[in-house]
Image 1: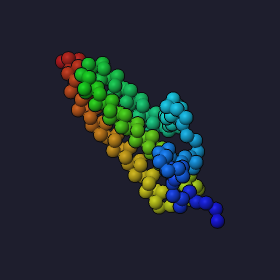
Image 2 (image 1 turned 90 degrees about the horizontal axis):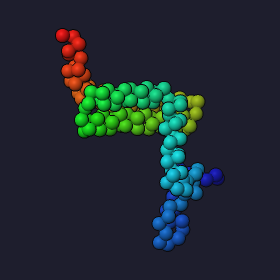
Image 3 (image 1 turned 90 degrees about the vertical axis):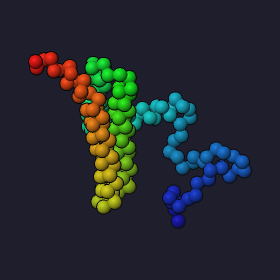
Image 4 (image 1 turned 30 degrees about the vertical axis):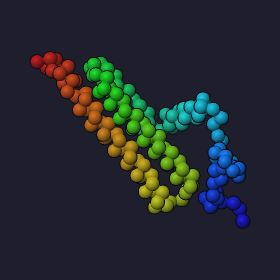
Length: 154
């Protein structure tokens, strides 16, 4: 009977008493250094930017929001809050992409109701974070934008 990864108990001590190094034999590849870890993370961001239209849209809108915040001279805390909400949206988009990829890998070309639920919930997380980001940016940017534009309409 072939070995099934899901039924194996991980060996966290490599069979050695007192060893704290985890057994990574089932890992595809382990980062050999912090720099390599950053390289892998950047590869994920790059993949998402190149292949995911919504990720690019979020990057563009987020950049516009930060640019507008700087132009309107919002204070540093307001800009930080906008930046954090943009970061949350981008992180959710990356998680959505990862979940969709794993689900597609698992179910291949077949339909499964649980796969649909997983993908829909991941997409919903992105939607909620994007709506909250719009709300936050609206509360912080719109009042100052209104004050900036008001003299143009007087």
